[in-house]
Length: 269
Image: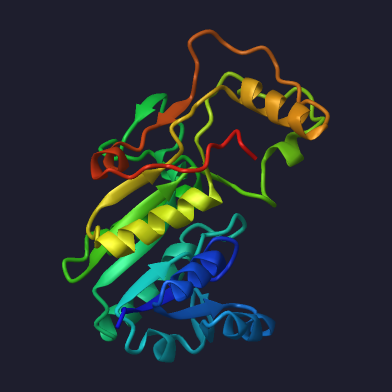
């Protein structure tokens, strides 16, 4: 019998992951902050739980959700409007509950935003330099879980997420005087996100840090111009750039060493 997996946060990424894992024979429990989604989770073979984290407490069924699961996927982004430190306080409560329930294997979904504005090549060995309050909180939460000796935490820092219903070019279309047109992109398709998370679970790649970024890095100007034309959208217009400035190039070195193969090119959608 396959293991029981909990997915904290069944949203744009967590919901399809839960469905895939359930279809593969795992027993899957999933949380949502919207009570109206409980029946939707249940209809897909996912045991549903309402859980909402706050700075000063938790609403819902956190302990029943964590009870008896063998591993936990944490897919709870910090959001853009929270006060500095708010996300860390929320996740510290989750961390405490995890320890109380003796769950040892954690898969934490993070972001390459923790690297901040570093210029040039970035790998998993690069020390993050988060530039925003949100990114600083995210890095602090990474360390909270990864530095806990009682946990085997694997963290995946995903680049920009794209998919059938999600692509930055739809927001950039027709905009003028955009900056950083010569910066390179660091994106990953939803399909590869799912394949990577499934591979970590199936191969038991615990206690590792991975950059989840597709290995194709054209400039924003080149990529979004092409993607806009492909979709019949107005091309975004970028200001003239500065020679030698390319932004950060996030490399998925650890995945390459693990033998993981990306399957969905970011210019195929």
